[in-house]
Amino acid sequence: MSPAMNFIDGAWRPATAGTLRNVINPADGSVLAQVADSTVEDTRLAIAAARRAFYEIGTWRRMSGAKRAALLYKVADVIQADAGRLAEVDCLDNGKPLREAQADVDDAVACFRYYAGLIGKPQGGVYEVPDGFGEMHAYAMHEPVGVCGLITPWNYPLLMATWKLAPALAAGNSVVLKPSELTPLSAIELFKIFEKVGLPPGTANLVLGTGPAAGQELAASDQVDMITFTGSTRTGQVIATQAVGNLKKVGLELGGKSPNIIFADADFEGAVEWAMIGVFFNQGQVCSAGSRILIEESLKDRFVERLAQRARGMRIGPGLTNPDIGAIVSQAQLDKVLGFIDRARASGARVVCGGRRHVADGCERGYFVEPTVIDGCTPDMEIVREEVFGPAVSIQTFRTEQEAITMANDTRYGLAGGVFTSDGARALRVMKELRAGITWINCYNPTFNEAPWGGYKMSGYGRDLGVNGLLEYQQVKQVNINLHPGPVGWYAQA
Ligand code: NAI
Ligand code: MG
Image (cartoon, rainbow, N blue to C red; front, top):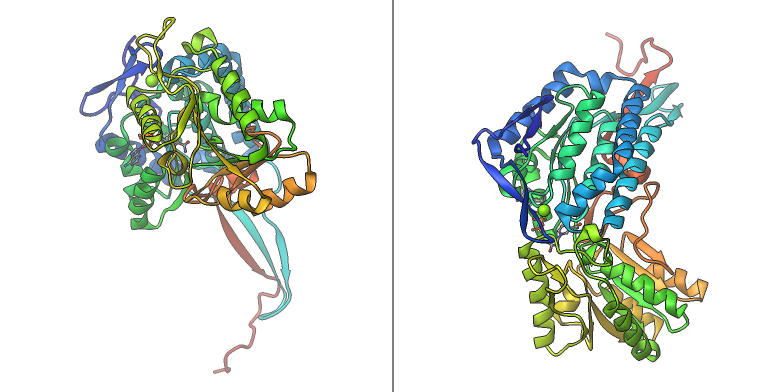
């Protein structure tokens, strides 16, 4: 396979330094592909192309919303027609189970269609302003921000790119996408689709490479009008700091340590399975993962026993074999996850099941971790405080509703949280007290294009998806119209 290149100004071009980087299949450590390993020079070329397309040529931003929508519907159609292959690309590159990769592709198709539809709907408002200088009308119009830098993570390669590209493009912006260096392959496929449907050159640009070398310039450059990022809280802080130079708009969707609160009156088997979906889906590499189970004391033993029994029954294997648990994305993340589990053990917590690298049955060379349940956790432990981003969940108990709420909010993060109970009023009371941007009641992790997604506290700011997701990529302009153009007589006549 020939190395994949950057897509800049409508053309595929190698990194200016000519260097390449290997893309690894985490199921066996083999090299899947080689791609351009860009430097700041390449990012600057992409930014310049995006600026020319937006500020000088202006084809995309001046195009009617209906025409932009038609092109984005075409993007969705082409993704859908090639869905099987695209799912395999993310499955191989990221390590996730095939059915989860297939769901990501379906969601990406729906996301492009959602924003294609939304851009044609009414936006802004008209206001009558009868006071002050006389009778006037004001209206608000929504305009694209300009050049948007988009930096995406490796856990949902195609979907995170889509969550940003679909609204940014629908709004009429020019974009530069820097996908994760660990999983760039589906983004490359997506840009081939952009090329095929004929987005105007320079509208959507792709730069492949690492964060510090290729990504950071998108945050730092005063030629970029906005940066949106999904990834770690630490990198989010770097990006926010870099972005301050020209006060560009910033959107950050960062880490989490989300509480999953289970009351004794919850549907038992339902709560067990949703708790598994909450922390084992995508090998636990989900920003919203329900990685802290807070459970009512009276139910704890029975619940932990059943959860561990079901976790032990999960099939671990290469993504293409459609297991319950696939590979962790990289050797570094594998080591990181195992380190968290080892230190939890050392700090006195009890590993009830899992806790080790899985190396049997064709997994010998891959980065697999057994689904892990850790009981006996106390609030000060690292396993309770830090994002693991792997298939490991800590268990803590509470006695009262208030205690559950206090424990749930005892974190610097605020991305998500779940509540399981058959008492509807209690579910709503607890949900309302959670300092988190996404909450689930009697379920965990389902996400919809229609509803806004994002965090409180150190989980970031700004929202992906929904109407809010489009607004992020727009500026609002106020237009005031004087209905009586004559003199107003404000100053003394001279
Ligand atoms: P990361 O936040 O460093 O990487 C995410 C993206 O940011 C990648 O595209 C990367 O190239 C880019 N990046 C890294 N440094 C950058 C910089 N200085 N300027 C601009 N872009 C930069 O995450 P990493 O190191 O891959 O994973 C570490 C931890 O981050 C995980 O263990 C997990 O806890 C968390 N994480 C959270 C995600 C989420 O969905 N909220 C996604 C991925 C990781
Ligand atoms: Mg990979």
